[in-house]
Length: 236
Length: 236
DNA sequence: AAAGCCGATATGCTTAAGCAAATAGGAAAG
DNA sequence: CTTTCCTATTTGCTTAAGCATATCGGCTTT
Image: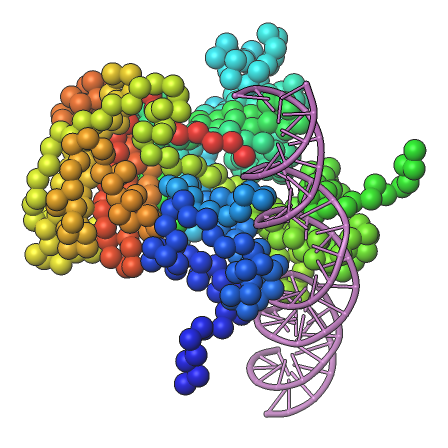
C-alpha cells in the first residue's frame, strides 16, 4: 500500500514525533548534535519553517537545546518540568460534579504583621484586610483560605462584599493579570485549621502559598490549606 | 522624533506585549472577542503570521481562547498554570552550593505488593527491585527516596550498582525519555522516614510521588520524602 | 601566549500567498 | 418549532524567500 521507505511527514507535528522517536530509540542520544534545520527540512521533505516550529516546541518542552551557530542538541539530561493548572476552587470542585459551597468565617482590617510586611514588601504603617474563608465540596470541608489583601494597593477591597463570593473571584476581576509566586509545602494543622477542615491538630496539611503582585506592588498573600488526602497531580 | 501615533510594532513579541497591555489596561476585558488576525495584522502593520504567533503563544500561556470561526477571546478567568522544574536531587543540592552525599540504605528483590501492582498495572507474578536511599546536603538529610523498579520492564536493573550513584541517575540514562505522572502531597512521617530525616514520627512531610512509563509499560514508582521545611516554589 | 577581530554558519524571525479544517449562524426542510 | 444542511468566516498550517542576529573558531595582532 504505497509503503515507501520514508513515511512522508506532512506536518510539524509529524516532524516532532519523528524527532522524538529518533531520540527515544537512541538514534540521537542525549548530548548529540542534530542536523541543521536546512538539512532536516530536506530529509523530511518539508519547509525549513516547519522543522523550525517542531524543534522550537521540543525546545520549549525541555528536550532540546538550541543556540545560534552552535546548532541543536539533545539535552544531556532532559529538563523535566511539570505544569500544574491552578483553577479557582469553585471550578475545581464543580469539575468533580460536587456542589460548591463557600463561607466567610472572618474579616478584619488590621495593621500588617511583621512577617507579612516582609513577605509582601510593605511599609511600616500598611493596613491589610484579613479574610478567613472555607470552601466545601458536597458539604465536606475542602479548603481553608487564609488571605491578606494590601489595602494601600487595592483600597476598594475594604468595601467589597465577600460574604457570597470568595475573595479569589473578586480579585480575579479586580486584578485579572498579575505576577505570582506560588509554593507548595506541607504544614501541620493548627487548632483552627484542624477544626475547620475536620482534622486533628498536628495532622499534615497540603498547603499552597501564593503572593501576587501587579505593577511591582504586592496585592495579596494567601495560604490555602487542603483537606486530608489532597494531592496535586499532573502528567507529562 | 518621528513619534507617530502608532508605535510601529515590528516583532511578534511586541505584538504580544501590546495585546497584553490592552488586556491589563482594560481595553479588552475578560470575555471580550478580539479582532481577527487579518484585522490586527493591518492595525499593527505586520503580517498575519506574526499576529498568529503572538496570539498562539498567549493562548499557550493561558490568557486567550481561540476557536476557528468563533474567533479569539480573552479568557473569562485566566488559566493560571505553574511550571515546576524537576531537577535531579544532586543538581538541586549542588545548585545551592552544598555538598551532595548519597547513601543506599536498602536493596531487595521482592514480589510486587498489591498496592504497587495496582498502581503500576503489573501482573500477579511481577517481581520488583525495592530501593531505599538517602540524599543529604552538607551532612544534613535532605530527601528520603523509596523506590520500586519493575524488573520485567527493566531486568538489567537487578545487576546495576546503586551504592555509589542514586537510581535516578541510572534510570535517566537507561530510560531517558518517558511518560510521567507526578503528584505533590503532604504525608505524616512514619517511624522509618522520621528516623532518616531527623524528624518526629507523625510530623508533616512534603512528598512527591512519581510513576514513570515507557512504551506503555510501568518502569518505576518512587516516593520522595523531603526534610522539614521543604517547599517547591515557582514564579510566573 | 593572550587579546582582539572577523567571517561563515545556524538559528530566529518576518513576509506574502495560499490551501485546510472547524464551525457559527443562517437558510431550508420537515 | 425543530432538525438538517450549507456556507462564509476564522483560525491552523505550510511554503519559499530573504534579512537579522548571535557566536564559534580561526586569523591576526599585541
